[in-house]
Image (tube, rainbow over all chains, first blue to last red; front, side):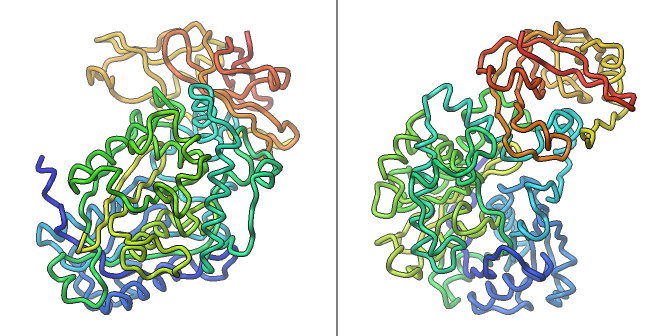
Length: 392
Length: 134
């Protein structure tokens, strides 16, 4: 395999999103359509320019939703990735493949759902992918029903092996909240949190307290991907896809069947592919986005990507290295814990805007040129993209 | 009290649940390479053989990890919370998930020894193999 095949071939030229809310009377599709139109507007393009779409399985979407509502008369390519929360970055990879192969020229990538009002995870209303059938038959009868319980067991194992503590998880929650308080669009803007608040929040499922869990929110975002060449003629500063990779968890049947639940091996693999393609190391990153369903996943991500060694993620976060101004800021918009849970799309949009230099000064990473976005989905599926400004 | 969400066996998994009704714990064993596997699947992941049979296992193992759920994620556990969901690694190497009985809720640790017991679900044909501290 030619690991360089996609390097800098494509670029993200448009990004847009709806408001992130807890409560909406709109359909999930309508949120996707608003996000898509905002992303196209941001790119200086219109629906007639779109010839490919990557619908989100987690949101129950199909190409026809977009074909008919956006009047796409000449759609040439569509594919849907079934990797849960890792689908968004993996969809960008498929978009880049289609563009690089000449099958498409302008790809729309929408994501997000009504995680509060509709497809809610904690009440089991979320869309069930085919891979969930084993858990439904062999784990749900025993009360292992929610993502919080699956990831809590991974975190518990991590604590057992490395001595990771609830306070360290709390520092991650507090950092994400600090960042959200610099982001007026974040759901938790204006709601500061202290470590004591975290430690006294109610226990959901050990070791996860309420503030270890990402938000259940409504909202959608979208990106527009074109060739890097075409991107130079469009209004926004191009954000190049310099490296990208996906990897699937093994065995795929359940989180509980991973030989080592404390290590996200697929994220190690996906990260290694993306970094190798881009020709960067974690030391080259100005900023890191981790789509964190739970606080623990930030630790797992830092370790799997090689920012720190296994077991060092908790202390690294507690020492402030992931705060804005720290060694490697993580999720400056507040992430899924405090901005909103948009299937990782909000992390991608923040990465694009950080590289463009378009976020408010209070949370702008100075000279931000190289950003990695790492996402997790289903049972440790993973995908990672390295984005760079053209000058980087 | 609302019942648990119950398994809906498929042709592939029916033998596991049929054995459980007889209070026996079985997993798939590859006829060709002998590898044990669970949850049931068509082929052996080691040698891709389609030939397999049900093989009895000891029902003894250790808690690989667990979580104590204070929020009941289903009405069946509304009066039982906090309850423990444990990932059990059998001595034969395969993993199974089980909630533990109430008396084990505050005693469980990673590495605790566990043993199987069979929980007939009232008013149904279903028996759930479950685990408790040994």
